[in-house]
Image 1 (cartoon, rainbow, N blue to C red):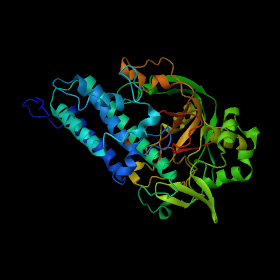
Image 2: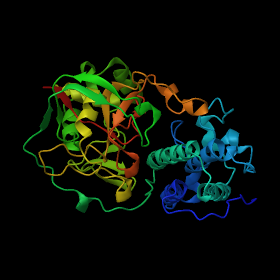
Image 3: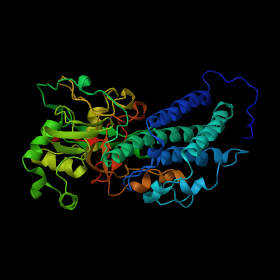
Image 4: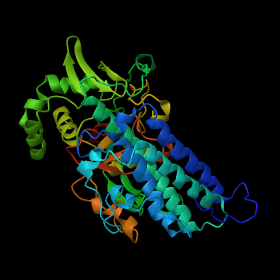
Length: 428
């Protein structure tokens, strides 16, 4: 490729471009390391329309930097102009896009070509970031691209897991010994109470946050309590054994329709075996550990379980109020476990961050005063603020540096392939 002019001045150690260049390399290499266990045949796997092949994720995250950063750079020549159509996800203002349900049909470009695409774009990005003439707007775009790529790191693992689950051979993504890592779950206090009142939520000021986390705003909360820990497999089994999936009075109407139409009898990735229940993990099939948080449940299942227990799901305002004073610490993707751990022995709130995304009762909607960014990036979050529910806290396949107490994830209420779980709430 044509060399970019970088100038001759020395780049100081605190140069923001140099700092971001190091982070860029870390995030991009992390994405590729998550793909190392895959065979070449695995890269094209798309097991349902909501999932995407691993090689599409690798290319799309690269397309993001090429389209929104490098396209504005003098002398840059697109790697392949046809990729703008193949790897655009949903940015209508950028151009046409290849149909999402058909991404698994793209045998070409090859995996080798896509890694070459990443290498070329990475070289250009490196030269841009260390060149010493990068403006604040571009720095913000690069950071957004890195946060976007971290989202796709989680999606790669979620999508690979679903694809491997559909295979009767039960392929193993990466062997992990789980049993010895799981502590006993003991606590004398099941609830943690909060006084409520007028609270300020969301983000204002410096530091990265997605546009859907802004602006900060005030809410009034009645006194409430959150369950100390997420709902465990053992607790959810009680719901199943009490006929939870056969009792329409426990379910929202759309949820009951989904139960009947798809034959739900347990969370996704569960099956019965001679010795009890088994669960599919990225380490393959294993006996269900009753102490671990239940995961891969839809909002409909979470809501039905809460109703069966005589409680409810927290609002996202309650969740954020409870979480914001806690350190962002937990079982994230960096642990290499890729599966939830049982709750530690303590009377405090535990596993607020990591392990499982927690469904809230809040619709994914704009905050008061929300304004989407101008241009194509206004499509990133704002246009999805309809018919989805908010989840909070991150999961065992979320990068730790990607999570904060204000982070708003969102999925459709019927979605079960995310690593989603349940924390109960009640009005105090």
